[in-house]
Image (cartoon, rainbow, N blue to C red; front, side, top):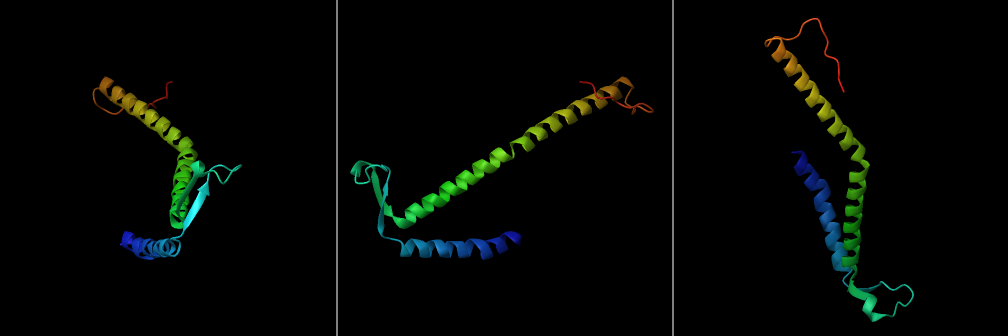
Length: 114
């Protein structure tokens, strides 16, 4: 139900705006890659304006995704550390149970050993 609402209220109006933008900006616009000599035809690309706008949108989405991925790196690192610690504690508990004959150790605490 939530996905359908997102589709209706966000995706459909966004698609309508992008289609209107593409239809209204069909004129060819040059993009000059040589800032010192903009008349150089080898470093000039002509394309409709909506292509440049959609390309800028795509670059922004990719740059935002990469930025978010790098920003979450510390959380992924902590998650890996916590998983490793949980695995070592699980192994320690199972080893302790195996040594005591399958019953849980009573009256003692398991100390972390590093």
